[in-house]
Each structure stands twice: as structure tokens, then as C-alpha cells.
Length: 309
Ligand code: GLU
Image (cartoon, rainbow, N blue to C red; front, side, top):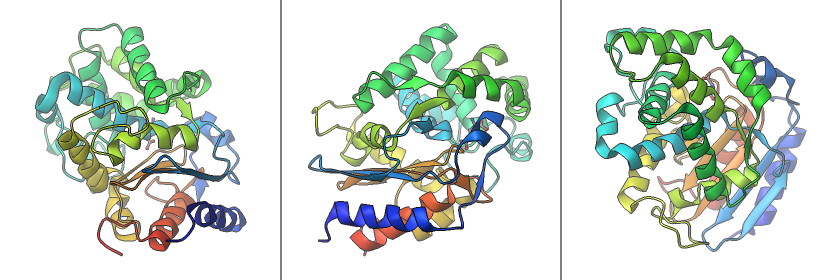
């Protein structure tokens, strides 16, 4: 077995040197200010060993990676009723597509495209005030990351709130079909704020550990979800975690993963490790370009693809 820290350091060095870095997201103006040269990686193995390199302690905007954790909370709150509100099929469409939503009468294809994540946010908001539910999401992230310093980047949240016309259209459209229970502005307010949570690779990899270990964080012994639920969240990550780049990610990396337009990816090697990478430049599907390249190198060198070495 190759030395994990050596593999991770090699990959970080290779990625830092590459010229093909993708394009930083600009539709949320605040994200356009991030340095495209940044690269971070953190891997937490089953025994708790941490291998990290590059900008692994620099917080970045987790954006859509937060959808894994809001789905976890929604399943905890509503169980399988979640699947009445959103499907669990890959969309084959861009993350903010409205066309599919019209064809499917306001029921989003899965919880990870924007419409689906907004519907999930609405579900966990019901019965609470926006501020309370946002506090609950943030505390959940702090608990999983074992770090009370995890915070929301208010500048990013305000920037997306100012410019999120497409998400407002999706939300209003779902509201017209009766899919959302709460006022659209409340649901969107919570959504942009949970997307604006900032975390480092190390914090994010720590937060993902329960997904790699049958629903339990092995360092604390805390059971976050039942094993069956962790397995199912991983399945949705594998099939839907990278929008219409999900097939390509499964083909190249072979792990459940969830990307965000901040350039982060959380990837889960079941039974083996939780991995977070960050490189802000995106490919055409809106997924981190070098993040994917780095994960492909990692799984190849360690034989970690779930589909075999
Ligand atoms: N907050 C972003 C949006 O709704 C999330 C998209 C992403 O990270 O892929 O557009």
C-alpha cells in the first residue's frame, strides 16, 4: 500500500503546477474574487489518519456540497416522505435548469440540482423560523466537522441573494405547483445561507466521515444516521452529485461525490476514507476541474474506486 501522505503531497504538487485550471464561477460575484491558483486536499482514513496538502486549511465556499447535509437533515426529519417531494434520478441537465421542472410538474429530479435542494430546504424550514433552521444547519456542520468555528460567509450569501434570479424563478415555479410550503423568500434566504457556509478541506473531510463508515463517525462513535441511510445518500451522490457531469465523475473517479461551484468536492470511499478537495476553477458542467483530476489520480493510485482496482 503506498504511503497516503506521499500520494496526497505528490498530487497537490502536480495540481499546483498545472496550467489547465478551469474557470472560476462568476455568476455569484463574490466567488469571482477567489484565487484560481488555490488547491487543497485532505484525506481522512478509517483509522483517523489525516493526509493533507496544499491549501487544506483555507476555508472556501462549500456551496452545493451543503446539499448532502441538508438532505441528511431532511431524511432525519421526514424519512422517506422526502422522496415524495424530490426524485432520485440523475438529471442529465445543468444544475439550474428550469425546462425539466416544467416537464415534471414541479417535482425536481433529485435533491442535488438546485430545484431539488431548494425543495429540501423548504422541507426542513417548515415549522421553524428561517433563523432557527439556519442555526440548526450550521450547528450540524460544526458538530460533524468537530469545529465550532465553521461559519457562514455573509458576503457570499448577500452576493448570491442579490443575483440569484434563476433560483428565484425555480422556487416560484415550484411554489406554483404547491411543492413549497413556505414563503419563497424565506426558503431562498435559508438556501443561499447554507450554500455560503465556508469550510476547509480538513473540516469538510471530517464532516463527511459518517458517510464512509456506515453512518457513524469512528472518532467519536456518534451515530449520525443508520447504515442503510448512509448507503443511500452515497448512492444519490454517485448518480447525481455532479449534475450532468455525474456519469463522467463515476467513470473517472469511481466514488460517490458532491461538488460545489466554490470548487470543492467531497468524495467518499466507503469503509476507507472521506476526502475533500478544493480547486476553484470549474469545468463546463460547473464542477471543479482539477478537483476531479486530483480525485481520479488518488483513486487510481490507491485502488479506491468502488468499481474495483
Ligand atoms: N448556491 C449555488 C446556486 O444555487 C449552488 C450551485 C452549486 O454549488 O453547484 O447556484
